[in-house]
Length: 229
Image (cartoon, rainbow, N blue to C red):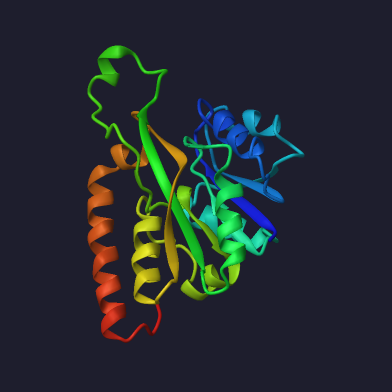
């Protein structure tokens, strides 16, 4: 199984190095890594350059995370796709565990794993105390915790480029309507960082509206019997 890892990056100079290090440090490394800079205005491009040529860097104007992901997927060559947000972290055995299961079970299209949430340790105590996160790992219904066959992803379709913050919510709802065959594995595979610049915090009202639209779209799709988008 040839795996492509996809990362959309926007103004992530503080955290993207740790994210990419966690991909490069996999015990079963991916066959290619694509990081697409979505028009960052901070020092992100300089940080990304330090990872070339181990990581393929693509630059585009600030079109949004969904388009960035779709562009990177189009440019990728693997027959399986993995994703990581630019401020989060994979555990070292993530791809080893998931690729073993996905490659051994012919009817399985995707696998997920557990995710541990954490407050970013670089925050000062006053800010950090405002965050309440679960103590225990949780089932990760997230693109960070997913490994999926490319043909399965293409069957479901690309991320919705009209959405600014809820790309995976809409995609996952659509995947369930269209019968994606997936399994939640019990292993912890990723860490989700909480910090003030999380998209869900910066664009909270937008995210709420988009989630409602995503749910409505999945209901409409179900009523149409899964006939697409």
